[in-house]
Amino acid sequence: MLNQNAKLTEDVFSPDIKMAPTRDGFGTGTVEAGKADPRVVVLCADLAESTRAEWFQKEFPGRFIEMGVAEQNMATVAAGMAAAGKIPFIASYAAFNPGRNYEQIRTTIALNRVPVKICGMHAGVSVGPDGATHQMLEDIGMMRMLPGMTVLAPADAEEARKACVAAAQTDGPVYIRFGRAATPVFTTGETPFQIGKALVLWESEKPQVAILSTGALSYTALVAARALTDEGIQTLVLHIPTI
Image: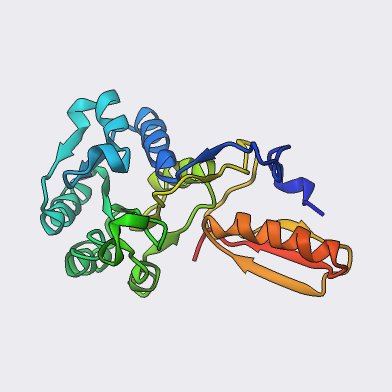
């Protein structure tokens, strides 16, 4: 059954559940973080609309920097800004950020442990017609191996908002993975979120099967758990937003 301590939406399994891409959480989360801390700035590589960076731009035009199609420069400029006391969020498609600027992230951000928040949009295979060049599958592995790097894969747009707010309050570099496609928003403002902590979403009385999931696939894991339980297979679903 659903774990009541997870405080999920009442319509978790409804066909009318709210849908939104996790990148929407980047837009709302950075605005919230920016209101709480004037050191927060956002840099974007010519994709302000599709990354939702324009939401921050409209709220704080003086703290938004359009870098153009120059992801490597964006990473190094952000590293310098972080060293000078800012909290930069850098946004582009994951295929380019960290796909194109990995060496700059490694050398100027990770090795110096500066608090740059790297935001990779359109990650995974859900970019559809954009094709294989934009289906970034390697980003979690690439970023996880960097020293001092925190890697987050939020489950939905609401958790993505919380991830951005938490990232702004976290010392050191953070990578957050966002999707393009709209996915179910099944967590709420009360759903617990803490960097480094997992969350039990579903727990039968005597679990026989454990499903560990991250990102938007945690909703699919919930659907699978309900189906397994209906067949008499007791299940546990553990959502792991911090890799």
